[in-house]
Length: 225
Image 1: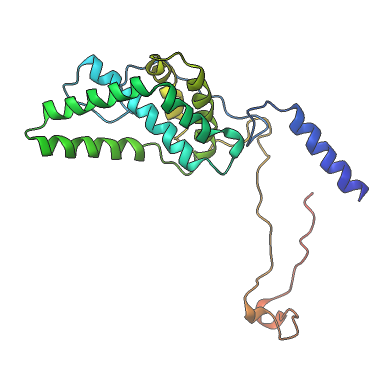
Image 2 (image 1 turned 90 degrees about the horizontal axis):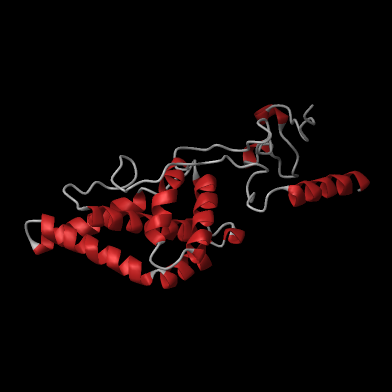
């Protein structure tokens, strides 16, 4: 018991000295990126013939979509506050968000041949935008970075959400590339437990291991060196 208490105590001390943002790693990978306009490759769906105002609107809507995806997919870690910060952002920046949507609506109405075609193109734009932030390997980095952006959005002056999007969209996009893991201790990582086979063929009715069918039982596993 003493040994277990010492281990737990060491873990608590280690976590207490880690940065407040380190929900997943002792040291997270640092992401960065230059400010963007919104029409650079890989930043968002292409809008051929868009004006600077329409490009800006697309960028604003891209960031809104990213924070929405974070609010939906990052709830497994409540301390990230992705949901309350997203809801607060919607209230604080509702005017800028509405203007961005109206601008995009006008863009697709202007560039489409018919009104229904414009609505379809707008819907497709929204689908592509949201799906572009879905990630598996990079989920932890995405959630952590999106949480930081969502927190900053709450304190961003009204009318300047687009500036936040311009300054941090490239950084957020980098998190979607893949899994980066622990940066402080490169050999540290999650190792799944090695369990014996649990299917009935390996066990007798008395609950004893049947070595003839499943080989020797190696349990508990040897401690790692």
